[in-house]
Image 1 (cartoon, rainbow, N blue to C red):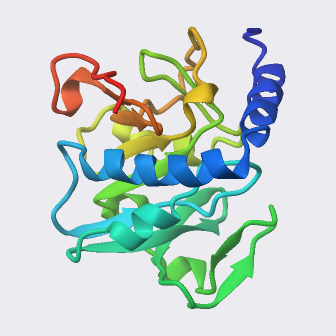
Image 2 (image 1 turned 90 degrees about the vertical axis):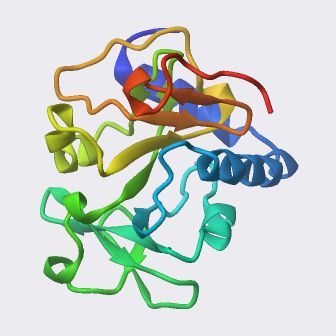
Length: 203
């Protein structure tokens, strides 16, 4: 596939949109199980997800199965960075400037990125080396830039469908590489995230 990032994003977004509903439902279940099995899953604290849009893999099953010591949060836009706010089903939502629902809170009152125990990030593409390709806005790269030279927490997990994997991605200097990438069929761990090598066994 092309390494022209805008073209690659378009191709991969079309690929995930083409997945049938039954595949999406099953994938959300498998994804939740894989994230909950991560060796660094926190016992307590704030865990951020995202509101699935544009064919992204859903996190609703993960939210429902989250252990009692963990508090589910959603992103809130604050200037050019993300903050995070606790959210439960039924809590008020507003639509941000990109048309994405987010908790109806004052952004300045939301949690800082460094306050999170773990963050599950959407992705457009990924490779076997754990490189993540996002939407191109740089929101997670800016918000978690401190993780480029600092150990977890927060632990960063990319989430997507297996069809979003490509042979190789060219990294950029501003990219924040996740500690793990989870799909419905595999888990890729960085060596520093609890495993000496990548785990890629199908479930």
